[in-house]
Structures are given as structure tokens and as C-alpha cells.
Amino acid sequence: MKLLTRLKSAHRKLSQGESLFTVPQSKSHWDKQYSTGKWDYLLEGQPNISIMANMINKAARHSSRIKVLDVGCGNGALFHELNLSKIDYTGSDFSSVAIDALTGCDGRFINAPVDDVSQLDDDYDFIIFSEILYYGDYREWLNKYRNRLSKRGVIVVSMYKTWRTTLIANWISKTYRIQESFIVKSCLRRVAWNIYVIR
Ligand SMILES: C[S@@+](CC[C@H](N)C(=O)[O-])C[C@H]1O[C@@H](n2cnc3c(N)ncnc32)[C@H](O)[C@@H]1O
Image (cartoon, rainbow, N blue to C red):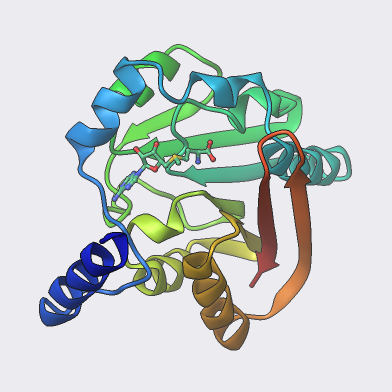
């Protein structure tokens, strides 16, 4: 039965010209999720977030100042792990509930969908796509944001491991130069993440 439902959904997506690898969700879906606290647990710390935060904090220690853009920043899981003394942080998300909760914190928060880059700069040292690529047209998104990198800048992608994200990762490895990659596991939650540093 489950298989039949999945096949029907795959058929519907394909017939509407949508990608099988993505599962877009609406703004109101996310607003509701944040209002009901469904993602509060992320703020208790996640191994994939810690890897990215360490990478950024280390780069900041060795620079005079760096610029970070966190696309789909959600409730600020990454933001809260950054040492902001040498980091200019911008987070964007289309959930106004998530962004409102961060307003007043020491960063710039933009309430906008990923497709809208009108308020962004074009010299970020790190552009983070943490657990968001599978919610939209990841090819278009990555290609668009690539133009927003500084000369030394990199895009960092984190995706929990599923068949869907493995296929996205295959596309990334064919299209981008992977500078570094990590696999992180949470024994407790039985989840693994792939993290790619690409350019
Ligand atoms: C699973 S959460 C990840 C949050 C955060 N990046 C993290 O790793 O903790 C996905 C986030 O992407 C945002 N999002 C999903 N689709 C989006 C879109 N088309 N434009 C902007 N934000 C989007 C959601 O509102 C949500 O905050």
C-alpha cells in the first residue's frame, strides 16, 4: 500500500515536470512547525551543525573578518554556535515565525524565499545550505548562490543521508569541485549527515 502511494506520488510529480528528489513545503507549513516548537530540539545541538560551526569559527580566527550567509537558517541552530566577534552573519528564511524569533540577535536576518536574492551581498566567504536543498530546485539554487561568493568563498552543504540526498550529492559531485567532505553520525538518533564544502 505504502509502495503504491509512493508510486502514485512519483507519477504525479513526474507528470507535472517536478523533480523526484525534492519535497517542497509551503511557508505556512514551516510557520506552523516553528510555532508549535517542532524544531526546538535543534537548538540543543546537532553534530552536523557543530562541524560547520567549528569550520567557520576556525576560519574566522585566522582572518580579520568573514561574511557568512545561512540560507534557510530556521531557528538559528548554526547562528547560536558561532563566535560572532569576527563574523558578519546573515540568515535568511521564508518562515516569518523563525525570523521574528531571531530578530534582535547580533546578526542580519532576512525574511525571504531562497529564490529571492535581491537583499543579499555578493561577497560571502561561507554560504551554508544546511538541511534545505531537498525543499526546492537545488540545481538552480546552488548555481544562483555560487555567484554570491567572495574570491575565497565556499558553499557548505549539509544533508541527512537518504536515497534522495544521495542522488542530489551525485549531482553536486559532478557539477562542483568538492574541497572537503565529512560524514557525521548520531548514534542516538540513528541519523547520518553528509557535509560537502564545494566551490
Ligand atoms: C529542516 S529546516 C533547516 C533549518 C536550518 N538550516 C538547520 O539546519 O537547522 C529547513 C528550513 O528551510 C526553510 N525553507 C524551506 N523552503 C524554503 C524556501 N523555499 N525559501 C526559504 N526558506 C525555506 C524552512 O523555513 C526551514 O527553516
